Amino acid sequence: MTRPSHEHEIGIGLRMAIIGAVLLVVAVGVGIAVVTTDSDLIDLDAWWNAYVTTFLPGIAPVSFFMNVAGAGVIGTYVVPLVGAALLALFRRPWGAVLFLAASAFGALVVQLLKSVFGRVRPEEILVISDHGSFPSGHTANAAVLATVAVILFPRVWVLIVGLAWTLLMAFSRTQVHAHWLSDTLGAMILGVATTLLVAAALAIPVVREREKRLSLG
Image (tube, rainbow, N blue to C red; front, side, top):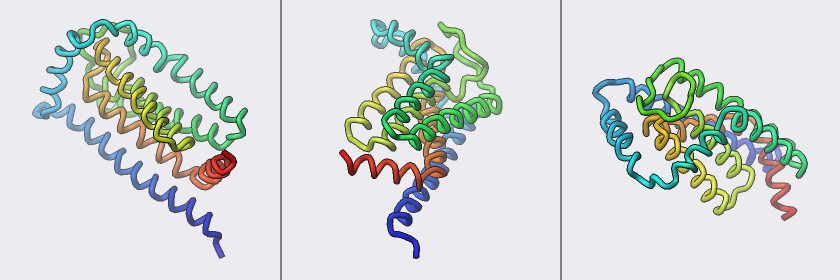
């Protein structure tokens, strides 16, 4: 007979899979909307791209820092590898696997959608970026990091910090005109979606490890 705890873990995995799949569809739907010329999102993007230039101009240095920290070598390789190493050091090996797998899968889906949609970035862009504006890789990376943190450390303060980090990253991408607002909104949804799908596949060992560590305080 299957142990109740095993059923509990499977149940959590199933819920994460369903929510992840729904959010993935929503993220792709946002992408379809932004390449549709009659989408209301286009008007919203144009308004925000002009408005963000005058909104909190004093934090522009923060946005340029986020540009470096959120992707490239640091965001794509250093953060996942260091984060995974720390999780392994603190006896969370499955948490480390989740972080690495979610980061890799999220980056793969981002690049796939960039190629599919091929959206042009704002003309006012102030940083050097790769092809494709939708979705924002920086914002998706931030959402992956935040979602992994909440899954492994289910605390209100972790949720608040993760959300704040993701929103700051999204704002920074629009302030340097690297992305349209809808690029970042779609990326936030996408980052959560891809992480939940990976977590669903690893639900049994990840949940078991998490609950064991939480029980130990």
